[in-house]
Image 1 (cartoon, rainbow, N blue to C red):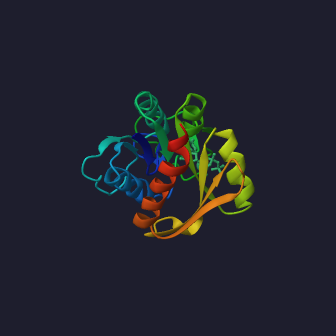
Image 2 (cartoon, rainbow, N blue to C red):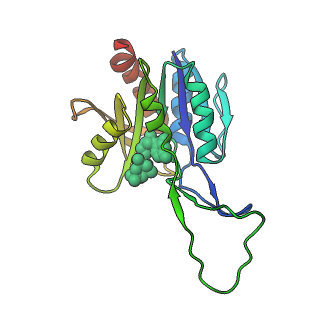
Length: 209
Ligand code: CTP
Ligand code: CA
């Protein structure tokens, strides 16, 4: 298979030097890229700014903003069999980005934020016979929210992971499919969890396509 993977955070700039972003090391996405390559697949990795090196044999497409991530993914998805969305996409952007650097005035400022494009939901809408796997990071009503995202983003399966996974080398994940039940649970180092998730995709989603 040729697999598209999104990873890392995106950045949304207030001006030319300041931005909003998310806490994300990119480890899970890069681990999945490595596992997929080891399993014999091709990987196109669209990544926000992280300090990790891509695995050997992986095509890396660095991006910064959510809009750049979306445009790159849309281009690449045309030639892929499926997508795994692990990116911690910035949910809001500044309505009007200012050129240069906004000078401090000693007063509080108000920023008007608007929602960014939902990369995975857009790819879900375009998927046709391709498969889509999302990740859901939840701090409350985890299962309910993960199932809601599974449908709203037209995913074949969604991986529920806990907030404690941010920045950690370990992860505990649950895979939820259209049965709305947990159909697999994996815990351990992210590299090991990634191997299990790639094996799960091969067996349960890709095989049926
Ligand atoms: N995602 C995306 N583009 C966005 C927001 C999210 O591609 N603008 C993807 C993420 O990469 C992940 C999935 O959607 O695979 C779920 O992300 P999450 O942040 O858990 O959900 P949101 O839909 O953004 O909702 P919220 O943050 O309000 O919980
Ligand atoms: Ca989000």
